Image (cartoon, rainbow, N blue to C red):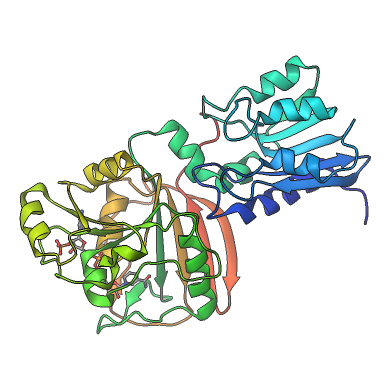
Length: 361
Ligand SMILES: NC(=O)c1ccc[n+]([C@@H]2O[C@H](COP(=O)([O-])OP(=O)(O)OC[C@H]3O[C@@H](n4cnc5c(N)ncnc54)[C@H](OP(=O)(O)O)[C@@H]3O)[C@@H](O)[C@H]2O)c1
């Protein structure tokens, strides 16, 4: 293997950090690589909440870290949490240089860069910053926005932008690889939400059923307004995790009375913004909205979507349930979102776009 530069080492650190997906929240995903003379001499990632942080895992994997460069995706922490400060571990191990992708905006954990510099270690910040900010978008968002969860929208559409055919059938528009990806995706969110139209049409379970078992099962959330909430739905099985129905305040008593499972929480909120604020107060830091089109459109109109995971299936449906029914937006006024990822999922295509990333908080 040829010499590894700091850029390639950071790309490696970012790639291994993802392995903590679903297991580390509310902590961030972090990867670290130790480099000496262009050779990787150690690496590690934060694998589970409460487990050693990435820097410590990397140090533990290395015979002799003295004089090495530590390339890490997030500022090393400076606080005593479930584990001792990583900045101190790096200082104690005698590393010579630290390369950080993105600073930690969390006031409780930040300060690692200053502590390292104070100990005479050279620190460089900002390598692959955009990639690192996208990797930890929910964590960085929550550190600066205590008012609502990070909101991601996931939709699978036909080539002509339909979520379902003219009869309302959407299972399965996308292929097995895309469905497996969605199971993996769900594991990393604090909550999974759908509109009442989807709950009635598909009666989805909204549980995580892939090989990745999340640290905590996501809360399932149903957004309803004027229509009848069924007495029983498969997602109301609270043995698989908490369930919340969001409904205008005026209907809370009636809907609570109607739902058979009394462990389902019925939450009053008169707008989507208010609903998101209430969910955050319940401790939900991130939510994946899985449709349908009307809920998606309202969330976009209310500027409540931070990321879109769009799965495009190579089929035409002509008509059906459109993914978005927004009012006209002129080209001059149209906001450009940032492309974070494009990849094939079997025959389908995944596009991940971010509205804005929290780079400097
Ligand atoms: N391909 C995919 O990825 C995918 C994903 C999901 C769904 N689908 C398909 O999409 C169809 C359902 O989509 P849909 O657009 O008809 O329904 P939807 O978006 O799932 O649900 C719409 C309902 O959400 C409730 N809601 C609460 N707050 C709202 C707000 N502020 N704005 C808008 N709605 C709000 C309303 O309930 P009330 O009626 O109580 O007022 C509204 O009728 C189904 O055919 C399903 O199979 C496909």
